[in-house]
Image 1 (cartoon, rainbow, N blue to C red):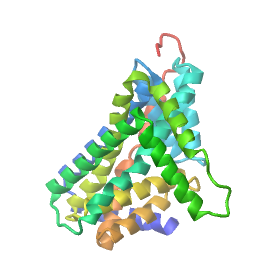
Image 2 (cartoon, one colour):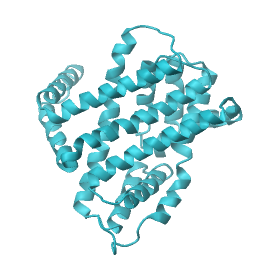
Image 3 (tube, rainbow, N blue to C red):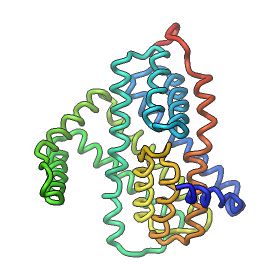
Image 4 (cartoon, helix red, strand yellow):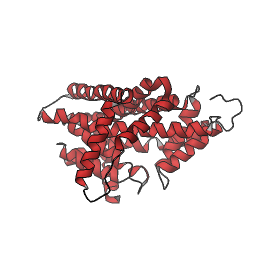
Length: 308
């Protein structure tokens, strides 16, 4: 993966292609994405104060991107800081687990929303049309998520469909039989953790990905590239899955190689794909790292005087 990282970071010399307004806009979109994640965690943790949530997330996120073990190390650090702030141990574990499940479930579901747009064929779009298409994607995601969280039959149908496909693709393997039941059970665990504010949590989850996706679109638009939003959404979701590969922290190298290749398939020129990937990863991966030290400095060191 090292050549992919070198190639991506080597495009920094072309940063002058981005106007100051574009860079500020991308930074604002990433800040909004982070705020949505903090709001989601605050709902799941049922914490009254923002400081323990923000500080622990910043520190855990930074560690997950530099330490061996990636996400596991970051989650352990965030848990430790939250417990030091006075949050109960048992419910904190459940809350962080529910957050991770909900966040990853949404990003796995997003590619399905791109299918109708792909079936429409190639359409030239300007920045406004692309932004509107992105908003529509995530508005639909909010509606679908609300249905799946509030009713049983659609989620059970999804489970049966996935189960049938998997069993047909792997006829010699042990067949899945309880996937719909397991999905409903995990959904109920998430709802139990989130409580009556699950709708707010769902909107925060969708917002977390909407603003992150917007950062990538803004990077492409800033260099004059306007590919089809549906294809960019597929590339974006693929990059998030690659980021989960535990071989390197934060998917370093895998994301750069995968996102660049998928953007090229979406119709972006090779040079623009590398530059857009660099700009996106600059704000999404590299710039948050120093804020981990800030999170450690701000994290409460004892439960005294803290109220969860």
